[in-house]
Image (cartoon, rainbow, N blue to C red; front, side):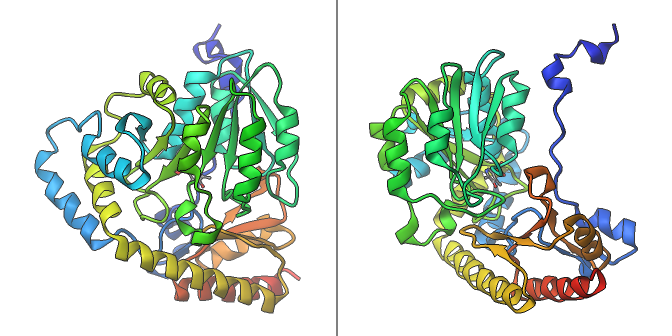
Length: 368
Ligand SMILES: *Cc1c(COP(=O)(O)O)cnc(C)c1O
């Protein structure tokens, strides 16, 4: 038998994650200048990282020959203070994606299953399949999670339920009371991974006090990231919050130095720069409004979003995606999420949103 055929069939069957197209790649393909291109494809922060973060990274350069702190002591201290949890309740990840994978590696194996929603974040089925477990995909309700159906889908083999709140790519949000009632009913032997990658974007009134649930639900794992609102996607740093037993198990399957030293220094500085975060949230709220009113003007349907992105229904999304690429606008087709008529556009700066809306207007005309 050939080498690659000897890999487990569940690994060979995995379809790779399709990332957003990089600016440099489109520039090469279309012969465009990089500065003519707008990338609104990966929910990245249009403001970049804060100047205080950049200064912290520069300071950390001198220590590059040393291994990072494998325990992430300083960063965990800051996170513990922010969230009112103990150091032992925090696990750091190479992006929050890493924490999702750690949970899958710790709990899933052939013969077990994970429950997640249709149109939910693509990493849940990926991590599930990579562990050889069975994915139970529950039909969505109005593009969001149907918690009653998800509860009913849990069976004796289920080890993890993944929930994204807000969800990517649909931007839908579950109310705190609904989630709390769900947590009350999930069997305590099932880990609930509540992925809150876009938590910071939520107005105060819509936020779940999810940290407070950790005490009552030892089977709850919250994940957060520095990739989105904090603007550090390229550095790869995120974290999970859970009871000490769950964190202890995640740490057993974690690479000892999974979060690099620049990322740790940057995340620490990012937490301290609340003025920058406020600006990010302001610009995102204004940008969402701009996109919504622009789409309404064009007569394009969209799913109201609580994140830093929006899904709009453009008919043949593959054709529109290609059309927009020619105009130097990169968005994300979401056919792989079972939404072949939609494009997901990330909220950019005012001028970038405008460039997208103009390109879309032209595209709609050209593809009539
Ligand atoms: C972006 C995203 C993440 C993870 O991003 P990291 O960069 O790995 O922290 C996790 N969940 C959802 C729903 C996301 O959209």
